[in-house]
Amino acid sequence: MELATNAEMTVEIRVTDTGRRIPPEKTEAIFEEFTRLAPEVAEGAGLGLAIARRIARLLGGDITVVSASGSGSVFSLWLPFETKTGSERTTQVRDGRETSGGVSLA
Image (cartoon, rainbow, N blue to C red):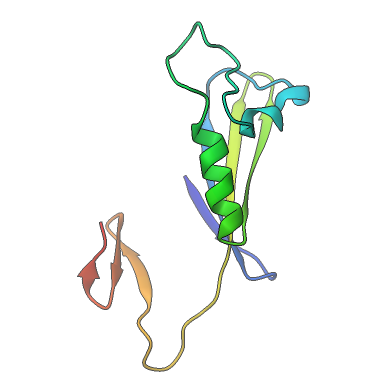
């Protein structure tokens, strides 16, 4: 997993998957409800990515995927990012756990 910010004040969280390649014509279809590319390989209803994308969009972001032959897929969660100033609490990541004002959120 990688975390990055850019000049447009968005945060990107990338998750790399080394599994099967997603065919280019299916990269948008996988975000639709009840879509499963390989139902014979694993269980599931095909709702996870559809729900995740819907939540991301409700938060003002999105989820995207890039898939290449032989290297799996990279899923990116994009969310708006704003900095807090003054007496407002800040969030930091320490030892893999997110903290806010000294209180662990993990």
